[in-house]
Structure formats: C-alpha cells, structure tokens
Image (cartoon, rainbow over all chains, first blue to last red):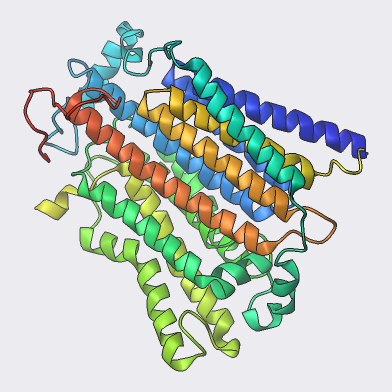
Length: 346
Length: 115
C-alpha cells in the first residue's frame, strides 16, 4: 500500500514537472495555456495527497478554472489585436462595445477559409541558444540550494496545536475558516483588498470591448447556461455554508459563482444593456468594506480590531463570508470581461 | 526507507524543482503570456513547499499554512488577471506582447495615450 502511494506521488510529481516544462517550452501559446490548465488540475490532486482538500477545491476552481478562462480570453484578444485586417477589433479600441453579430460571423468565415493566419499572433519564437547555460545554472543552483535547505530543516508541530486549542472561541468548527476569518482576519481583509485592487486596475485601463471569444449565436450555449446556472448557484451557496464546518468557504464559493457569471456573460444576448455601473461598483467593494466596517466595530465593541465577540462570531463570520463571496465572484467576472463598463463614461 | 518518504518529505522537493523550472522559464522566455505562466508555476512551487511542510508528521496538517496558501491562490489569480489586462493594453498600444528594450513606441510612432 505504502509503496503504491509512493509510486503515485513520484508519478504525479514527474507529471507536474513534465507538464510545466512542456508548457514553458512551448512555441504555441494556445498549447501552453491548455498545458497550464492541465497543470492546475494535476496540482489539485497533489493538494489532496497533502491532506489539503480546501486548497484542492480552490485550485481546481480558481487556479485551473478561472485562470484558464482569463488566459484563453486574453489569447483571443491578442489574436484580434495582432490581426487588425481580420476580425472587428483592431488596434484601436472598438467604438461600439456591443458589436454586431454579422461582424463576428464575417470574421469567423474568414477564419474558416484561412485557418493558419490566426496562429501568427498565438505563436512565439523559440528562445535563442545564447545564455542557455547561465539560466540553467542559476535556476538549477537555486533548486539545489532550496532542496538542501529543505533536507536539513527539522520540523516541529507547527501551529496546529495552537489552532486546535482555540477552536472553541472561533465560532466555527473548521480550522482553516477559523484561521482565515478569525485568528488571521487581517490577511483575509488585505486579500480582499488585493482582489479589489486588481479589478480597479483592470478598469483603469479602459472600457471593455465586445468579448472576442463570444461564440456564434445558437441555442446550445444559452440552453446549457439555463441548466448550469441554478446548479452553480446551489453549489456556490453550499460551499459558502459548508465553510464553517467542512472544506469550503468564501473563495471556493466565489470562484464557482464567478464561473457561472463568466458563462452568463458569454451567453448574454447583445441587446441586453450592461448592468448598472453603480450597482456593480457597490458589489465589487462590498466584501472588503463590510469586512473593514465589522472589524472597526470589533475595535469598539469587541476585544480588538478585526476580532469578534465569542457569542457573535458565527453570524459575523457568515455575513463577512457572504459579502466576500459576492465581491470575489463579481470581480472575477469583471476581470474576465476586462475594462470598465461603457456606461461609466456616459 | 519507504517509511521516510511520506508526502510531507517528498512534495517540498518537487515544489523546489517547480520553482526553479518556473524561474528558468521566466528568465528564458520573452513573450509576456509565457512569463505570466512562469510566475504562476513558481507560485505553485512555493505553495507546494508550504503545504508539504504543513503535512509533515502524523499530526493533522497545519491549518495556518493551508489558510495562507488559500489566500495566496486568490492573490495569484488577481495578480495574473491584472498582468493579463496590462499585456492586452501593451499589445493594443505597441502591436506586440513582448517587452523590448528602449522607450515604449506605439504603432503610430507617438507616445502612448490612454484611449
């Protein structure tokens, strides 16, 4: 049994390293991105082997799913930018964010006639041989140094006993949620601020254009979205609810709801107006602001900044997690759509 | 021998190797998308070292390390999304997604302006 598990670990690690190597050595960007998504899914299996089901859930949903969607839509954008004579999105941002379907259909017809042309933007030159050995020496030397450090390091019990001893004051029954939203709430607040900052940064770069990856109009995508959306919402809310006593929590729930939002933004009819930018802004900032407001309230009413009174800890954590889920999901969709709503400037 | 090679011992070494592989890609590849992928792979290596050390021994794994890794994954996806948005912006201004030495030049040869 032990030998079989050891073999599994070795094969998994070799697979991870091999996929990462092929991904970074690829001259075709599309291939690199697909290999990166594969890498994320293999990584989720590795996290399960390391007894970290929360991280595995987050990696599969965020690391492989959302990052993959972001990378693929970026590749489509680059393709449209670098082939300005084809497609409707030239180097100058398109004036009309709701591009007509006929324009897309024309571009697709041209794509079909000339399948090789679109790949120019998605390929990159192989690296020149000059400097190969110095790069290998630097990274290989660093790897050996890291491994030597890891081999000589002796390991203590870590913080697990300390967390286990204080679980009864945390308000929840799941160690990671207790750490994230009670013992080290500061980290989580700054993390939400980081997500918000990324969204604001993307918005500051300009208005969003029509999604270049928008599939051809047809009944399949809207039908699939109609079936998947309720399932995704129930899964997201369940993950949020389960976070207090089992693997799950705000980030995983936010990623699942964000994926549902991305599907919906792809299937949305062109004629539908963009959501109200004011509501969107409130939704994107709600998580961090709610967290900060309740943390400040803890400064005056409770023991200290970002701490909760013992009897109120559970409801407060649930409220904060709900706000965080909403904000993370909305920000991920906003980052996928890319750029602020045209209605902001109107 | 097999007893000493539990996941907590094996995976940190794999994480170190992943980190070095990502660093090599970051140094060697010029295209910005590949560099973003390389940084993500380096990050995954760091997470693997962290979680591997947290899972060492017979006790339940360290929840603080796992919580920090969860935070790290969300921060990584935010930073990746912003980096991708910057890459698209650069490509829109200059026509390519590679950082070249020298001052930034747009298609039209003038200074980049926000559209």
